[in-house]
Length: 47
Length: 152
Image (cartoon, rainbow over all chains, first blue to last red; front, side, top):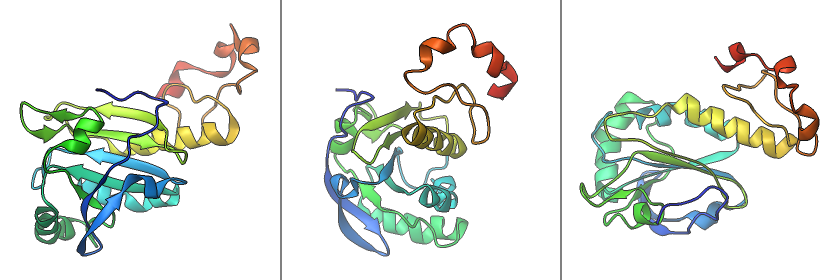
């Protein structure tokens, strides 16, 4: 299902590479701040 | 994504956090970061590079492409209440415009702070349109304050 403007962003928890190590990130931990969530097809690409 | 890394300080100045997501493993993110990103951009990516190996996050946000098994190039601006305020999805051959993402963020923040509306091509310093509640009085009068040249 596509997402709509004005809807609550679905929460997720996932592994991330951050500050030199692999750690778990949860979207809802960022509540209270603006979040820019960017998806891209793959690492090592440049378009 | 290197362009996002370059502009990360601008996002921070706006009080925004950046999260990037692809189907790559966290280990691949680490390799890419070490071998390329940190060579292109001083310090590399200073934000979390999230791993979405099965496309679950992409699926949640409607940007997982099951034909290719990849997340589509896209961005979501999520406000401090967790509400989605902007969405852009692009076909793979086209890169994003980071300056435009920053512009959208500034416009959304300006709206939340003032209630004003930001017309086509608005950048900080350009004219805005009336606050909510004053909109009926704007009817037929927009031409007096907004000119097409303001869009560019």
